[in-house]
Amino acid sequence: MLFTGIISLIFNLGVSSAFGYLYWDVYKHKEKLKELISSKLGLLVVFQIVFISLGLLFGESIVSTVIKSSDQFTYNPIFILALFFSAFMVFYEMFLYFFRNEDKLKLYATLSLSTLLLLTIGTFAGVVLLDMKEVGAIYGRTFSYGVVIVFFLAYFIYKYGINFNISKSKVLLAFSIPLFINALIGALSYGADRIIIEQFDTLENLGVYGFALVIISVIETWFNALNNTLSPTLYKFIKESLVEKRREIKGLTHTIILLVIFFITIMLDLLIPENFHRAATFVPILAFGFLWRVFTSLTSYSLYIEKKTKYLLYNQSSNLILTVVIGYFMYQVWAIMGLVVTIYIVRVIEYVIMNTISRRVKELPFEFNKLIFLSALLGLIGFVIVYLNLNSDCSIRYLLYATPLFALLLSLPIFLKKEIKNLIYIFKQRKKLF
Image (cartoon, rainbow, N blue to C red; front, side, top):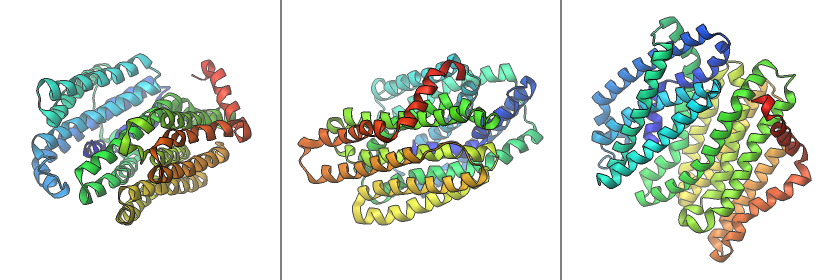
C-alpha cells in the first residue's frame, strides 16, 4: 500500500488535485466545465498508458534496487498489480473530487460504498476462497477496484467525452506539477518512517508499527470525511466572500478541528487500551501528531486560492529531510519509539512552516490560537501516557488513555467557549450553508 500510494502520485502528476481546485474557476459555466473534464480524462489516460508501459519494462530492476524484501515484494505479480491498482486510484480521486464539489451525494456514496464493498469481497475471495494469502488479497483488491473504476470511467466518457487538448493540458500541468512534486515528497516523508523500519528492523516490528498506523488511518478517514463535506463550502467562501462570510469561515474550520479532537480522545478511551496491545503504545503520540496535520491542511488554503502552489515545495522538502535525518538518529537511540517522537516533532515544524508561508501569501480569519494551545496540551498528555504506559502497571491503562478526554471536557467551558459557539452556529445554519 505504501508503494502503491507513491506510484499513484507519479501516475497522476498532480492533475487530480489540480482539477479539484480549477473546478471552482469554471463550475458556473457548463461548457467550460465539460471541456475541463474531457481534457483531464484524456491527459490521465495518456499518463496511464505511458507510465504502465515504463513500469512493465523497468519494474524488475526497480523492485530489486529499491526494496530490501524483493523476494516477498515480487515484480510478478505484486509490482505489476500495484501498477494497475495505482492507475485506478488516480481516477478514483478525480471522480470523488467531482461528485463532492457538484454535491452529487448519491453518486459520491455509490462510488465510495461500492469500492469498499467490492474491495472487501475481493480480499475475502483471494485470501479465503482461493487460499492465495497476501497475494490473493492483492489480486482481489485490484480486480474489484478495477471493476468499479472502469464503470465510472465509462460513465464520465459517455457524459463529458474525452479529449487530449495540448493547450488545456498545459494549463492543468502548470498548476498540477508543483502539487505533484509536493505530494510525492510528502508521500516519501510520510512513508519514511516505515522505510527506515523496513531497512533496519524486522518485518514483525514493521507489522506492529503498521498496525498502529492503521489505527491512525481511522482518524485520517474521519478527517477526510469532514474535509470532503465542508471544504467545498469553505473554499468557495474564502474565494468569493472572505469578508462577508468571515464568521462562517471560522465556524467551519473550528468545526473540523474540534470534531477531529473529539474523535481522537473518544477513540483512545474506548478502543486502545485492551485491544491493540503493542501497537497501542505508539498511538497517543501519533494521534495527537496528526492534529498538526489538520492545522497544516487548513492553513494551506491561501496558497491554493492565490495559485501559489510552488510554496508547498518548501514545506514538504523540509518535511522529508527532517523525517529522514531526525528519524534515523532517533531510531538509533530509541528504536521505533524514536520514530514516533520524530513524526510528532516533524508535524509541528510542518505546521509552523506552512503557517508562516500562508500568512505572507494571504491572511485568513481562522483564529486558531486556542485550538493550537489545546492541541499542544493534548500532545503533552500523549507523551505522558506513553511514558507511564512503558514504566507502570498495565492495570491503570484505562485511566491513562481516558485522560485526554477528561482534559478536553475540562477545557471546553474554560477557554473554548467561542470555538464551541462557532461549532453550534454552523450546526444551526447547516441548511443554509450546504
